[in-house]
Image (cartoon, rainbow, N blue to C red; front, side, top):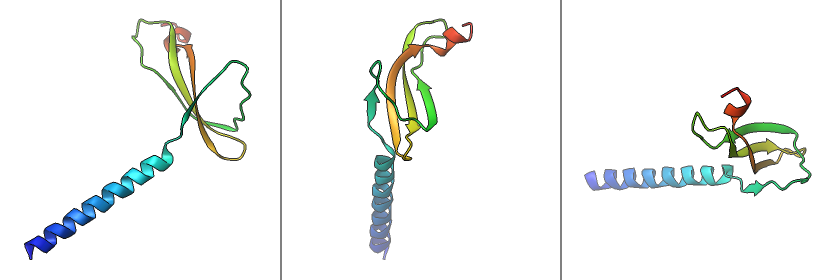
Length: 90
């Protein structure tokens, strides 16, 4: 009886792991590198993330913008920018 319960537990755990992996794969968008002058179709910015830098470092960092286009399709765009601390008097 314990072998059947153990087998059921293993089966449930493996199904949950595959379901989780599939959900993560569906949410992951390829990141496109921005090029100067590139035309963008941005309807809504979802998130902007910046590479962590030293609190005393005021320079260029890598950043990523996640957005939705006019058709509601998600996109991720990588680009370079001044660190946020540079703009906040850091």
